[in-house]
Image (cartoon, rainbow, N blue to C red):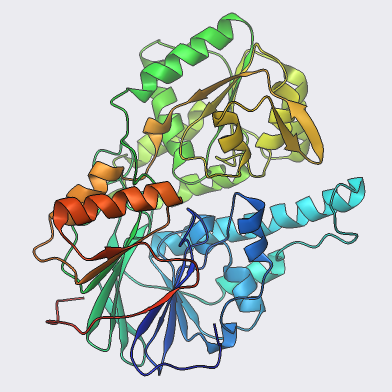
Length: 469
């Protein structure tokens, strides 16, 4: 895209998540202001990860404001690089998202710096001088730009551009983003939560909008009618009988809390043995305070939140983490990341993955190109820190724990609106999922729907009326 070109009519450009389930970045441009909705990192296949290193499609200093739907890194993780490279404006987010980003962005930067140092030390990078995508100092500069928007309040953030955030479920602080630009209303789902999520409240109903930009992570599938606690209980009992170790890769925000909730219920009913449970994620421990401060956004009391974290022994230091790899079973280790893309879980997988007594429980969507996806596909080895590690441990998938609405949930949420949008764009899904959801929207709802390509731009339709933002 030409970073200098200003348009005569409002356009929407898909700078990320248009052919994948990561890297959400949507640019609204009306000729006088540019607003970026989400600024995520690309994850998964190398061809996607390399986009993180490419120059941003428009000059960062040409963007007037950024609105972040929620704190997961595929929606917020590129912010430090954007600010470092010249973005001059404010970053708007809900209070919960802002608080979580203050934990997640420095943690992401720390892991990136640590990975670069490790690669340089052990010479497994193809680069002679491996550099992190950004640093902890970059992350702090980005955090200084955050400005909280209270959910439900409308705020003018640029000339002729106003925004309102509405609850989306999914994780704490997650919102849909409703942008009014030159009289047109565009609704971005962000990641849409489930109406039956055991942890989070359901998403806010879909109010009328001229344009809908929807995620499609589970656009081609349905959450199985399987009790995740039954599956977890079976695996844990089986592994403990053979004196093994249960590894549970889990996102530090959202999934870890759900895993702990299920384990607590199983322990209360006496359905799993009283073996040690370790929470090896300093970030997840820090997140507990955020959940405690926002009881209105989830289904747990403050006491319940504290109890979840009391269930597991927190592992804070690197030395404590290393000792877990020498301890052996039986035990349960919960650690990030949920798709095995980085973090301490990789060290545990390297230590315990080769032993058939152990098990790896995958607890949510595994993007293509990740180690989690490889294990889900039956891979007998995965590459970790430049070495191919054999995986003989049992691999179990419990995707019913996903915090995303499935295809039926997305359609039901759309169907409930009082009037259809003039255009729908299906994003944030792998190609098969996005196209399957497109077909259902067209067939069942009769709406004008498209799956955009990466870097595509579309002109926003003229509004028929002016619905409330």
